[in-house]
Amino acid sequence: MNYLVLVVVATTCAYLLAASALSPRVNYENQSPRPTEAAVDARLDELNLNDKTPLAERWMVWAGDVVTGDFGKTVTGSSVNDQIEVRILVSLRLIVAGVVIGATLGVAVGAYAAVKQYGWFDQASTAAAFLVLAVPAVVIAISLQVVAIWLNGLMSEAFGIPQFFVFNGERTPGLETGFLGTVWDRFKHMVLPTIALALGQFAAFSRYQRNMMLDVLGSDFVRTARAKGLTRRSALLKHALRTALIPTVTYFTFTFGVMMAGTTFTEKIYNWKGMGSWLIDSIATQDVHAVAAVSCFMAVCVMAAAFLSDILYAWLDPRVRVS
Image 1: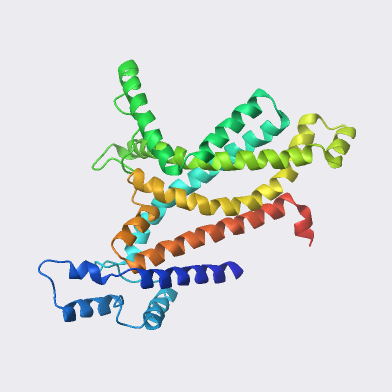
Image 2: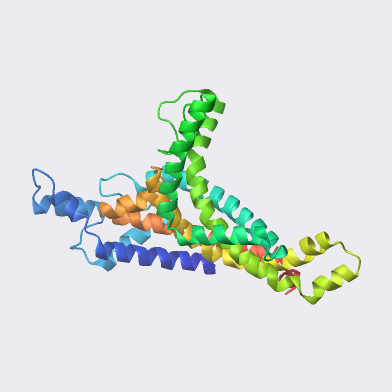
């Protein structure tokens, strides 16, 4: 219930901010021939976007529709819900893949780097993580495109593969190659944007997990486990790593917000028609209802991450389940 309240508050704030800052009227006043003011007002009233109507009244109408599952109309008159149905799966594919790959790899690398503290692996992973953290997500995404062009050229000359890495859209338009061919085509389009998102997650989680692992390696319970006859590997995996994962799971919720921002830029750069790119386009077109819908989606994702972290926290720490 707390998460539901937070989603409502976040979405309401996003709507009020968008309705106050954006001006859908501009889209109609710049048309040629320019429609009359009465015609513009009538159209905006139909869409519940008329800035001459009190903001509270517009919000009441919009909120009443949202309760029934209707996020309203876009500035062009199309259904916001129809756009959500098309775009939400596009974003979720990137988000889930980026989080799973980046977080898993980051935790594994960070934990191993702590065990091999000050060794070559620790130093190499530290340098790689700080490099990724220092470079903006936009630069990483564009750099991957440059590297992909170079690799495509090498693979074409060496193996005759025309274009393995594709970075324009989520699929090839008009391609008809059956189920397996479609899956392979989508996979090729997904490789680069997924790597772009996973790199940021890897860098953050590897540094955080390394620090948490170092805090528990010298703890009494780890030494006690070894004294009872457990092998070093078992003591590290069953006791040290499990304990070190508890604060990392909490940290997961906060990094998810950064992940959403990275998805927005990545979708735009790789021309994926997801929720993130829709947010940028909606702001540019003064589309209040679309901005509010995307904000609601982002709030739900962050709250889902928080809920998942609570479940994982209880799984890792038996004391939470007992209390």
